[in-house]
Length: 77
Length: 150
Image (cartoon, rainbow over all chains, first blue to last red; front, side, top):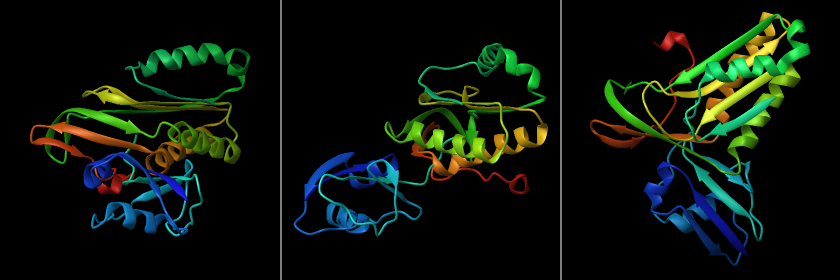
Protein backbone atom coordinates (compact mmCIF):
# COMPACT_ATOMS: atom_id res chain seq x y z
CA UNK A 1 0.00 0.00 0.00
CA UNK A 2 1.14 3.61 -0.75
CA UNK A 3 1.40 6.07 2.13
CA UNK A 4 2.37 9.79 2.09
CA UNK A 5 4.31 10.65 5.25
CA UNK A 6 4.71 14.28 6.42
CA UNK A 7 6.77 15.83 9.21
CA UNK A 8 6.29 19.30 10.71
CA UNK A 9 8.36 21.92 12.54
CA UNK A 10 11.17 20.46 14.67
CA UNK A 11 10.51 16.91 13.45
CA UNK A 12 11.68 18.00 10.01
CA UNK A 13 15.08 18.76 11.52
CA UNK A 14 15.05 15.53 13.55
CA UNK A 15 14.34 13.14 10.68
CA UNK A 16 15.93 15.24 7.94
CA UNK A 17 12.89 15.46 5.64
CA UNK A 18 9.51 17.16 5.30
CA UNK A 19 7.73 14.55 3.25
CA UNK A 20 8.18 11.10 1.70
CA UNK A 21 6.04 8.63 -0.23
CA UNK A 22 6.50 5.02 0.87
CA UNK A 23 5.22 1.59 -0.18
CA UNK A 24 4.40 -1.11 2.39
CA UNK A 25 3.51 -4.76 1.84
CA UNK A 26 1.46 -5.19 4.99
CA UNK A 27 -0.92 -2.90 6.90
CA UNK A 28 0.82 -0.69 9.47
CA UNK A 29 -0.26 1.72 12.19
CA UNK A 30 1.02 5.26 12.81
CA UNK A 31 3.84 4.17 15.12
CA UNK A 32 4.96 1.38 12.78
CA UNK A 33 5.28 3.86 9.91
CA UNK A 34 7.46 6.18 12.02
CA UNK A 35 9.72 3.28 12.97
CA UNK A 36 9.95 2.13 9.39
CA UNK A 37 10.65 5.55 7.89
CA UNK A 38 12.67 7.23 10.65
CA UNK A 39 14.87 4.36 11.71
CA UNK A 40 16.59 5.15 15.00
CA UNK A 41 15.22 8.69 15.33
CA UNK A 42 13.38 8.69 18.65
CA UNK A 43 9.90 10.18 18.50
CA UNK A 44 9.82 13.05 21.04
CA UNK A 45 7.37 12.89 23.96
CA UNK A 46 4.12 14.75 23.31
CA UNK A 47 4.00 14.23 19.56
CA UNK A 48 0.64 14.38 17.80
CA UNK A 49 -0.50 12.48 14.72
CA UNK A 50 -3.01 13.07 11.94
CA UNK A 51 -4.33 10.83 9.21
CA UNK A 52 -5.83 12.63 6.21
CA UNK A 53 -5.84 15.93 8.16
CA UNK A 54 -7.67 14.60 11.19
CA UNK A 55 -5.98 13.91 14.53
CA UNK A 56 -5.68 10.21 15.32
CA UNK A 57 -4.31 7.76 17.85
CA UNK A 58 -0.84 6.24 17.44
CA UNK A 59 -2.23 2.71 17.01
CA UNK A 60 -4.64 3.64 14.24
CA UNK A 61 -4.15 1.51 11.12
CA UNK A 62 -3.44 3.13 7.77
CA UNK A 63 -4.87 2.13 4.43
CA UNK A 64 -3.72 2.52 0.84
CA UNK A 65 -3.51 6.19 -0.24
CA UNK A 66 -3.57 7.63 3.28
CA UNK A 67 -1.48 10.62 4.38
CA UNK A 68 -0.02 10.45 7.88
CA UNK A 69 1.49 13.54 9.53
CA UNK A 70 3.65 13.78 12.64
CA UNK A 71 3.68 16.95 14.76
CA UNK A 72 5.82 18.02 17.71
CA UNK A 73 3.88 19.62 20.61
CA UNK A 74 1.87 22.63 19.40
CA UNK A 75 3.07 26.14 20.27
CA UNK A 76 0.57 28.53 18.70
CA UNK A 77 -1.13 31.61 20.13
CA UNK B 1 -17.74 33.30 13.20
CA UNK B 2 -14.85 34.79 11.31
CA UNK B 3 -11.72 32.68 11.45
CA UNK B 4 -8.66 33.31 9.32
CA UNK B 5 -4.91 33.27 9.10
CA UNK B 6 -2.88 36.35 8.21
CA UNK B 7 0.50 36.32 6.53
CA UNK B 8 0.62 40.10 6.84
CA UNK B 9 0.80 42.11 10.07
CA UNK B 10 -2.67 43.13 11.26
CA UNK B 11 -4.04 45.80 13.57
CA UNK B 12 -6.39 44.20 16.08
CA UNK B 13 -8.01 47.56 16.80
CA UNK B 14 -8.79 48.27 13.15
CA UNK B 15 -10.27 44.77 12.80
CA UNK B 16 -12.39 45.26 15.92
CA UNK B 17 -13.73 48.60 14.65
CA UNK B 18 -14.51 47.08 11.28
CA UNK B 19 -16.29 44.13 12.91
CA UNK B 20 -18.29 46.40 15.18
CA UNK B 21 -19.63 48.17 12.08
CA UNK B 22 -20.49 44.84 10.43
CA UNK B 23 -22.50 43.77 13.48
CA UNK B 24 -25.02 46.59 12.62
CA UNK B 25 -28.53 45.60 13.91
CA UNK B 26 -27.14 42.90 16.19
CA UNK B 27 -25.02 45.46 18.04
CA UNK B 28 -27.96 46.59 20.21
CA UNK B 29 -28.44 43.06 21.53
CA UNK B 30 -24.81 42.78 22.65
CA UNK B 31 -23.97 43.69 26.22
CA UNK B 32 -20.49 42.22 26.45
CA UNK B 33 -17.40 41.81 24.28
CA UNK B 34 -14.23 40.06 25.44
CA UNK B 35 -11.00 40.52 23.57
CA UNK B 36 -7.66 38.73 23.82
CA UNK B 37 -4.62 39.96 21.88
CA UNK B 38 -1.45 37.88 21.99
CA UNK B 39 1.68 39.56 20.73
CA UNK B 40 5.30 38.58 20.36
CA UNK B 41 7.68 39.29 23.25
CA UNK B 42 11.31 40.22 22.68
CA UNK B 43 12.41 37.66 25.27
CA UNK B 44 11.77 34.04 26.17
CA UNK B 45 13.29 32.02 28.99
CA UNK B 46 15.47 34.99 29.85
CA UNK B 47 16.99 35.18 26.37
CA UNK B 48 16.53 38.01 23.88
CA UNK B 49 14.47 37.04 20.79
CA UNK B 50 14.87 39.01 17.54
CA UNK B 51 12.11 37.43 15.44
CA UNK B 52 10.00 34.30 15.19
CA UNK B 53 8.67 32.15 12.37
CA UNK B 54 5.16 30.74 12.76
CA UNK B 55 4.69 27.43 10.91
CA UNK B 56 1.22 25.95 10.41
CA UNK B 57 -0.45 23.03 8.67
CA UNK B 58 -1.94 24.28 5.37
CA UNK B 59 -4.87 21.84 5.39
CA UNK B 60 -5.57 21.42 9.12
CA UNK B 61 -4.95 24.72 10.88
CA UNK B 62 -8.02 26.70 9.77
CA UNK B 63 -10.20 23.60 10.12
CA UNK B 64 -9.09 23.11 13.73
CA UNK B 65 -9.58 26.83 14.50
CA UNK B 66 -13.13 26.56 13.15
CA UNK B 67 -13.74 23.42 15.25
CA UNK B 68 -12.80 25.09 18.55
CA UNK B 69 -14.81 28.19 17.65
CA UNK B 70 -17.82 26.11 16.64
CA UNK B 71 -17.59 24.18 19.90
CA UNK B 72 -17.62 27.44 21.87
CA UNK B 73 -20.61 28.73 19.87
CA UNK B 74 -22.50 25.55 20.75
CA UNK B 75 -21.53 25.72 24.41
CA UNK B 76 -22.30 29.40 25.03
CA UNK B 77 -24.76 31.92 23.65
CA UNK B 78 -22.58 34.07 21.44
CA UNK B 79 -23.47 36.75 18.91
CA UNK B 80 -20.15 36.75 17.04
CA UNK B 81 -16.61 35.38 17.27
CA UNK B 82 -13.54 36.72 15.48
CA UNK B 83 -10.26 34.76 15.47
CA UNK B 84 -7.21 35.91 13.50
CA UNK B 85 -3.78 34.26 13.78
CA UNK B 86 -0.51 35.28 12.09
CA UNK B 87 1.65 32.92 10.07
CA UNK B 88 5.17 33.49 8.77
CA UNK B 89 7.76 35.88 10.22
CA UNK B 90 6.77 38.03 13.21
CA UNK B 91 8.73 40.59 15.22
CA UNK B 92 8.59 41.83 18.83
CA UNK B 93 5.30 43.61 19.68
CA UNK B 94 3.64 42.31 16.49
CA UNK B 95 0.17 40.95 17.27
CA UNK B 96 0.13 37.16 16.75
CA UNK B 97 -3.46 36.30 17.67
CA UNK B 98 -6.74 38.11 18.18
CA UNK B 99 -9.72 36.36 19.78
CA UNK B 100 -12.82 38.52 20.17
CA UNK B 101 -16.21 37.32 21.39
CA UNK B 102 -19.45 39.28 21.41
CA UNK B 103 -22.40 38.13 23.54
CA UNK B 104 -25.44 39.48 25.37
CA UNK B 105 -23.80 38.88 28.74
CA UNK B 106 -20.25 39.03 30.14
CA UNK B 107 -20.14 35.50 31.58
CA UNK B 108 -20.47 33.86 28.19
CA UNK B 109 -18.13 36.27 26.41
CA UNK B 110 -15.40 35.98 29.10
CA UNK B 111 -15.62 32.18 29.26
CA UNK B 112 -15.78 31.62 25.51
CA UNK B 113 -12.87 33.97 24.83
CA UNK B 114 -10.66 32.13 27.33
CA UNK B 115 -11.81 28.71 26.11
CA UNK B 116 -11.06 29.49 22.46
CA UNK B 117 -7.63 30.90 23.32
CA UNK B 118 -6.59 27.98 25.50
CA UNK B 119 -7.97 25.45 23.02
CA UNK B 120 -6.08 27.19 20.23
CA UNK B 121 -2.85 26.63 22.11
CA UNK B 122 -3.45 22.92 22.65
CA UNK B 123 -5.43 21.84 19.56
CA UNK B 124 -4.44 23.95 16.58
CA UNK B 125 -1.31 23.05 14.62
CA UNK B 126 1.03 26.04 14.90
CA UNK B 127 4.73 25.97 15.77
CA UNK B 128 7.15 28.75 16.66
CA UNK B 129 10.78 28.96 15.61
CA UNK B 130 12.70 31.69 17.40
CA UNK B 131 15.70 33.65 16.06
CA UNK B 132 17.56 34.48 19.29
CA UNK B 133 20.84 36.01 20.34
CA UNK B 134 22.10 32.46 20.94
CA UNK B 135 20.90 31.07 17.60
CA UNK B 136 17.67 29.61 16.17
CA UNK B 137 15.47 27.06 17.97
CA UNK B 138 11.98 25.63 17.96
CA UNK B 139 9.82 26.53 20.92
CA UNK B 140 9.16 23.15 22.54
CA UNK B 141 6.06 23.91 24.56
CA UNK B 142 3.63 26.72 25.33
CA UNK B 143 3.73 28.69 28.54
CA UNK B 144 1.10 27.64 31.06
CA UNK B 145 -2.31 29.24 30.97
CA UNK B 146 -2.38 29.50 34.74
CA UNK B 147 -1.34 32.76 36.43
CA UNK B 148 -0.14 30.67 39.38
CA UNK B 149 2.87 29.75 37.26
CA UNK B 150 4.22 33.31 36.85
